[in-house]
Picture 1 (cartoon, rainbow, N blue to C red):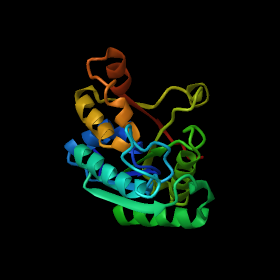
Picture 2 (cartoon, rainbow, N blue to C red):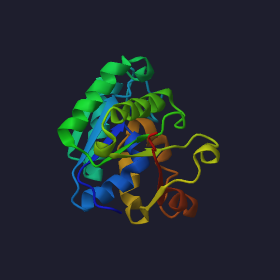
Picture 3 (cartoon, rainbow, N blue to C red):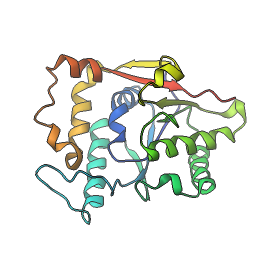
Length: 217
């Protein structure tokens, strides 16, 4: 994996980082600073734990703590939680959101941004987040733009986007990925009993993290 100057992760929900936790951990182990901007507290999440450990009132605070624990497991020290309303990122003032992202980019000067691929990431918040990131980077001079690596998992996305440009082998970090996921007890507690690193299908699926490089026109 190429050594980066600074990696900026921009995702909308607590637990989204579990999809790329191995890649982020590898960057951190190389000594690269990582900043994670999480747009919402995931307060509209449907899961409350099994058995329930939260309700609609307490869920935001619980998910905040879960995110902080997941980041501790991964090694992320710079976590920024913006507190936008969950499930409505697409209705945020786009110019204002792009402006906030521009300000973070100007502050950190990242060489790489990790986010969702707009239009190919299933959840409207995922797509809106990725779109705002692309909008911010597009406003930069081409020579100053960081690379943007996107997660995509919509059905059939490879037929349109082609094969992923980056496939990171994170098989040595499967335990870390599992612990990051388990930190989000309100969302994944029901899965704890069925997740096993001895499961070859799980190891195969989690051992590779795939990204598409966003190509600006």
